[in-house]
Figure 1 (cartoon, one colour):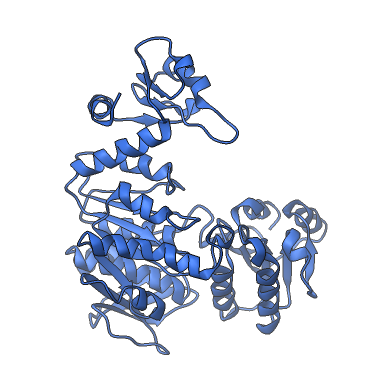
Figure 2: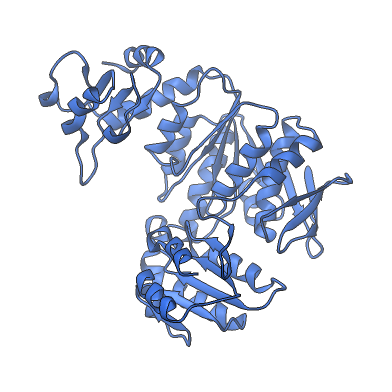
Length: 431
């Protein structure tokens, strides 16, 4: 069955499923394959659980006409999403970058929903599988889509653009993320520039952080761009959309351009002010009033272990345990160390996917803690355990939990950050 024929079925049954444990009634099930699974084996189970059709790429599993055989189920899913995108006449905003993508996406969604019906990427559906699934969720009721693009090797953002076909885009920054896949920081920059290149070739509009010289350099050849600046006392830059910080920590307070209405956010730090101003700039571009933008910014609450402030019975936790790389950890440590309150404790978990850079980058973070005179630091993970330091080290999160049960911490401000695989959110049970 070709893409057009499959699309006609999709119009009748516009729900896509890829997991037999979460089958939507009358959906189309795509039997995807991976290194450790072959969903062709579960195509019949998907139908029994309520799917209308099962798309498979192994004819041996076809039992009747409810089984649709294609050459490659993943490619068919991606081609279906790209075909669906071609039918849409709405703004599609793509977000790429090393740090802050999800926070920026959520802020933008919160702002733009004050005026428009917006679909945005949910959870971590931002890769070569998740992005097509996100595109296929866009329906006739939506007036705008915000698509997060997660890449871990060069060429992936270019490929994701070929499916999402964004007409607007933003690169949050260039940091030391996924160095194992990108090779080095130059690979990161090359990958993020793929979004700018797509927008340039297709007359799209890029939104660029005017404070970031590297991003401005990368975007120098773009004919269509809008700039934004999150200005504060030490740093002022001209841009199309400007916000000026009244306060950066422990919470951000700011005003847009020269307007007098002050806005506030539970987020903290200059890097989060960048994320906020990215959302503000899209709000202004798409005609939202200051009141609508204020509503979107002030009602946004961080979740999913990102920039969350959690007050337990004994302590206040600054939880940022969804992901981590050297750039994001450095920015977070600088911000937390500048907080005015005392009784600070730092808990850092290993940063994953750094490849040959793992040893030097973990050592650099240790040395930053020492430079910032952070004394109460707990380090968790094999990489941090190997570093030269004077802090308390634990191989696993469970080891630290056992330690804290015997020596509980009370009345402290605790910053927690590490890669998702470290499961640092479990520490909330002992803090």
